[in-house]
Image 1 (cartoon, protein in one colour):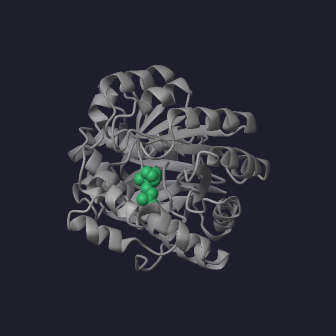
Image 2 (cartoon, rainbow, N blue to C red):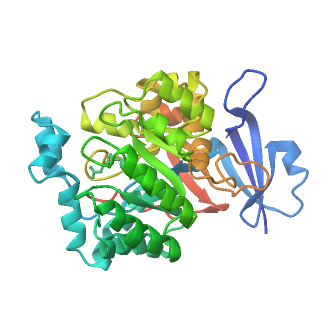
Length: 407
Ligand code: NIG
Ligand code: FE
């Protein structure tokens, strides 16, 4: 079925504009033509209309259209909350101190291990509904709160089951998150990573490389095992100190290196050379309230492609709103609005190795967001209240949850 979308004040395409070196192209008075959920034409309204014989027309009221957002790094499957941790941090305790006293990631592990599959699924679905309301049409979700093989695999199965409850595309990652004893690396590779790959429960493997967590040597071992299972590698690096994690990600040819708060110029250059996508997570810097912001600017200036993701999780970034993260990337991480838009659309897609979305190119999925504004830059102009009017997935308007999930 042919569908024609007219009345687009600005159609924003994250292509590189060679004339002004902008990462996005803006077409005014535009239209989109969609067939079976895919873009078959885009451009000036009159030109597209001439190709649209008998198409069903939807008038978008002179509003801006941007691609659906791609959130390439989340931990959206978890149980309960860590509001106590948040409250303690506001009184001055650090993320590390709270974890050492029984809060932190391990407290989320306990909640997940003790919950039923149905409870995990129900609570996680609420998060996904909130993502969708905020314009996210594709989202990656990691394991890492199960820790033990049976619970890690169950967490990944929940992600699989969620696919039939949401129109969003979900990608899943098996995450080595907490190391209890050195033998855990073997357990992870043999009893979590391998079965996850065998049963197609994950497309990616990720490791939290940090002091007190996994070392470079652990990550190298896990990366080898992931490669042998056909999983693509992503890494959490340089979040709490400069651990030369960016260089590690480049050396291991990771698809993306995420966090990068403490990454120095040499690390950025290594990522650029390796073609590893540099993913910044400004929500973490806001939510933890201490430590530096990742420098999107410096990363781009040394040649990296910079994606932006929420890192949505109960402990370090309880922020499901990717447009807000884009706004912070502009106000605190040095990116232009155009670079921020690229980061939450095409950048996210590249960080997930997806080539059928993020740009609204011909042949791509018709996943797009209609703004309640004619100027697309308004997407970032009211951080936390982006003017999102309607979300389309494969050309269909998706039902938005009537109200934000109550946390
Ligand atoms: O990406 N850094 C490790 N993992 C998450 C935090 C998870 C949590 O605190 O529950 C992150 O920040
Ligand atoms: Fe994370």
